[in-house]
Length: 343
Image 1: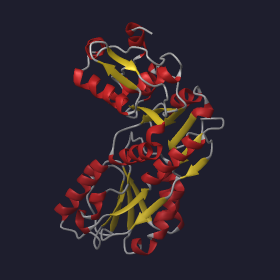
Image 2 (image 1 turned 90 degrees about the horizontal axis):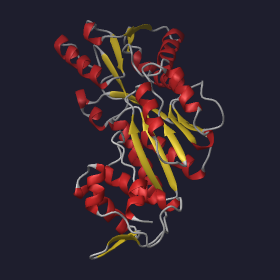
Image 3 (image 1 turned 135 degrees about the vertical axis):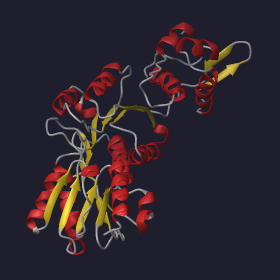
Image 4 (image 1 turned 90 degrees about the vertical axis):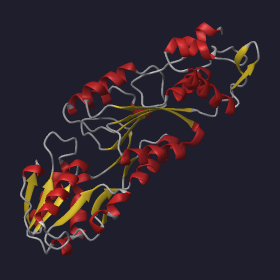
């Protein structure tokens, strides 16, 4: 293979969250796996790749150095880079689509990378809960993948998203965090049981909640959070005779003594805390707070925020298990209530 043909196999996607040096290395590894790049083939120079894809020489050099560390690439002064070995240990190609970047999604990603080690090349994309962006990313994919891993949270257009997901090969599909009922066939999944999780967690906190008169769920309109959370919340309040309220705009609410506030969004938590501090009410006595999704800082905010949270590290480990075992099993992810002084 000459250098110009090798250039055609390199794919650099500006939409991808995967660093460009990793995309460069993944492209060459993919070419080797497919038999298109062979031992002793010459690779394009650093300058050629930099010019062709409008990326820095430092980025190209870093990608090539990673391949050198793997024993795949070597160089000869005056001649350039060549394929030293086609013994590619990375036999998994993962197309990873997350709805957003966050502390919790990073835990999933970092755990997945750790569990898979050097067995997988991961192309990582974020579609920002937008079904149009989701479709564009799927349509732009260049490589064949062993697995498609998708977190399917959309503000609108869920039916269209399900149709797009249904077009993927089900034996390669793994759905994470939320299952869409419209997605058919046998595929792998690691999921939250949203209505059951919040019901069971509030039941565990029932004695603490009993000192309050009303439980409020702050659930913004046009949110990507599943409506099943509302269903589980209302079922609990109805069964155990708690007054309840769904709040769409916490900024417009007066904070009332005897109320518990369950927040989903981190931005809403900031507004809620500001309003409580202005009200001079005492958290954990006059008003209660339960925050969705555990983070390290929530142990310290207001002497400790009570949280409802899925186990994101467990989710990453289960995802890796499904990939490594090529399984279509559906795994319900563990969910936990952590009681602290805010309740």
